[in-house]
Image 1 (cartoon, rainbow, N blue to C red):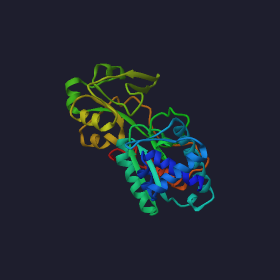
Image 2: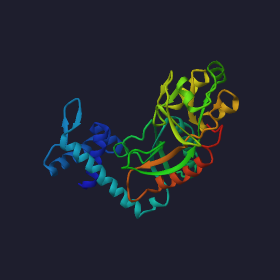
Image 3: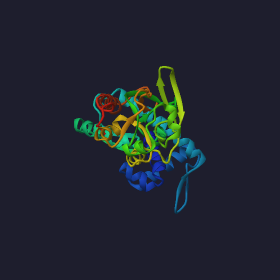
Image 4: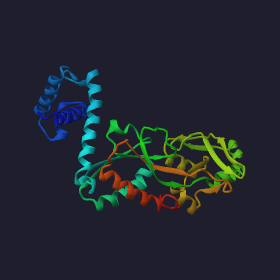
Length: 302
């Protein structure tokens, strides 16, 4: 049997957690999937799976072999993409990870337009707060907000959005309007964990940057819960203009501390470190960069 094919079967079975699931993903029979695994185990002289009538799990050697197989199969895919038309026309499946709010708005809208242009491309999209393990989860491209901490990944800056501090008219009437960043320590500041650092807001004036430790009645790992809380008078929020722009225009929220500059929120595309980028990834990054540059800094584009 072709070893690369057997390795691919092994990876699919391991990810699916069953021979039947892996076979179904590949469009082959369960018996054929079992035959591939048995051939691999025979060649390697070791068991890759612990099998019972109820479960299938990787052995210690199997877990290590899975990691190596993913690397090898990834390298083969890149090599083939470098010398075929896959490098010029997006096709296949593009798996994307994105934070919930921007993923459900700008990224999904950009994807819809991109798919219209490229009929041979399909998309799997995951909405989650962090990029996750791109290699382990098979993610081609992840959208990341804010500073980058994982230096093992390659990143490309796509756009920047302005951050603003705002609150509802009712809240400001009851608790007063902060005049300086230091005043925030006496206010309920609703914290969005998705914008690190989660309990520190940074401002810039003529004297340079200053960091204010904030706290309030609500925290969340996504923007919409604290946006709704702010509209209902529970505190102040620091959020990108693409999220609160329409609320500001409608008077549901009002800006405060307008004389102070907040560092911009950078939007990055993150992907595994690979020498060759497939056409689907490269083309979508180019498309998304142009899409975001014309929208994320504009109020009222949520």
